[in-house]
Every structure is written in C-alpha cells, then in structure tokens.
Length: 243
Image 1 (cartoon, helix red, strand yellow):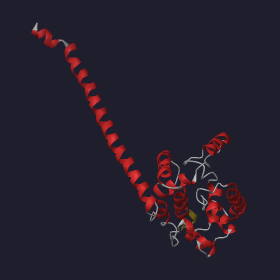
Image 2 (spheres, rainbow, N blue to C red):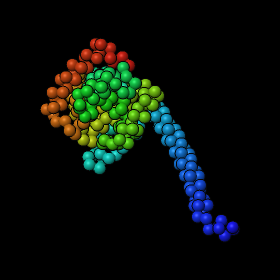
Image 3 (cartoon, rainbow, N blue to C red):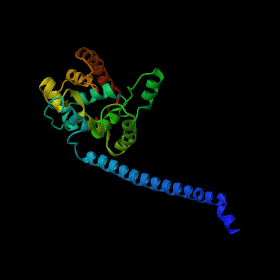
Image 4 (cartoon, rainbow, N blue to C red):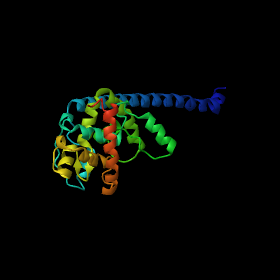
C-alpha cells in the first residue's frame, strides 16, 4: 500500500500545480506594490516641479538644450508679463489659443472640431504647449502625450493663467536658436518686448508653434489674421484672465 501511494503520479503532480498560483499571486502583489510606490513618487515629483516653477523661472528647457547642438542660442533674458506689450500677449493667444481664458487646459470645443474635420493635430492649447516646452520633449509619441495630459490640469490648478502665458512667452521658439520673447524682439526687430507694435507682435506670433516650418510668406499672411484676432479678443473680453 505504501509503495502504491508513492507511485501514484496524481498526488505528485498536484504539488507544483498548487504552488504555482501562490507564486503568481505573490509576484502580482509585489509588482502592484512597486507600481504604486513608483507612481506615488512620480506624482509627488511632478507636483513639486509644478510648484517650483510657479514661483521660480525655468532656467532652460530640454528643447533649448537640444537646439544648442545645431544653432547658436541667442541671448535670453526673462521678461515678466507686465514688461511685455499687451498686444504681444493678445497676439499669441489669438494665434495659438483664442479660448485660453475659457478652458481648464484643454479646449474641448476645438478638439471636437478637429476630430470632426479629420485633421491631424491643431487643438493643442497654450497650457499644453507650456507643459511640453518646460517639462517634456518635442516630437509626437503616446508617452509624451500621456504625461502632457496628466500634467496640464496640474499646471492649470497650481499656476495662474498669467503665469502660464508668461512662461510660454519666455520659452517658446521664435526662430532657429531664438527662444523667448525678449530674444525674439531683439533679434527680429532690434527692440524690447514692452515696445513691440501690433504689427511686430503679430509677425512674431505668426511663426508659432513651428518657426522652422513656416516660411516668411506664410507667416506674413497669417500675421494679418492674427492682428485682427488680437483686436477681437480685446474687444470681446477673452483677454480678461491676463489683462
């Protein structure tokens, strides 16, 4: 009887079958614990970085560092929003995100319009572009889009609209190696941000957000529409959040 029990294969096969689910359960719990651990710390790091740049100006960005390999970077100087001609702020908003003061980071009406028309892109807000320029990298990828989608509402919740627009104006690219409105005003017109005229502001805003792709003729045509748009949002009050 004892020998027969020892030779019974059904009893020996049950041992690893019973152990394997337990090991898988322990592995699953371990992985879930690590995912939670890493996720909490990434969320905390994101919040701290957003809070940090709500109070202090970003010294540089990954985009600027990458461009420095190909172009000499023009001298940059931070310009507070009150030291930038109001028409410049309005022109950028008119060009990039006319409903900037009305949304919480994502312009859902514009997103629906773009989806309905079948276009590729074109619904990115100034808030999203600021997050991309300050914290992330250029180029299209699902990972970057996912991080951007998480961080944009966080920036909107912590920063003011004025701060978002100020940071954007100081890190946006206005030409090869030309980053920020101070460098752009000096490089293109030999002036300072507070002295920009309506025409100059519209010309600068016309190259955003793709200064390397938009030619002079295209930027000139677009600048005329931007000048009209800047006047429109001033008249209808859509500049109230950064006025």
